[in-house]
Length: 246
Image (cartoon, rainbow, N blue to C red; front, side, top):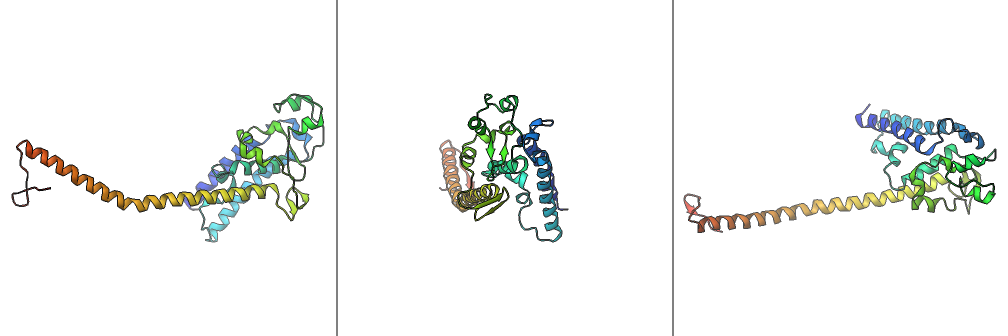
């Protein structure tokens, strides 16, 4: 296995468990039994990382690995990608979100950081909803990224306005939330790449000019120094004993 591929696989495993720690419920959290399917959220997250590593290995064995390996493993890539936090949030909602099958108690609700209430409108404000209405509880939102402006804007109105929603992963004539976030992330990353390439090109093109400027300044300083020595009665001889002239 190539060293960069091995490094990408190890980073993906580390990033996976960081994702589970920041976006998943705590071990022993009983509220997972209030949301249908959330007990399998950790297994889903592990399967995402496993598929990414397997895909990376398959591309290497087929000798078709043209991209940087770190771009092909999602959890480690999204940690530093622009808008990557929001994509990770959509992954978390996809893994642990689901229909509510039991009403939360006041204690469960308060653990999310909001005052206890039985009012439906107040309770709904503490949740994050997927495109099909699946619920992701506020008490699981431990990552600081949920408070970012990009996150608040993205989750303000996640419902599909055009397509037909069959499930959170199947939408006709529209995209699901993961696809929408991934598309924004891709566009922002392309802007960053173009900007970085422009800066690097400007620096490379400016190197010859900087070298010429350095040479010119160096000659001026050398001439000034030698003239100062001549004034002090020191004569510098070069080229067969001839005096140096600037």
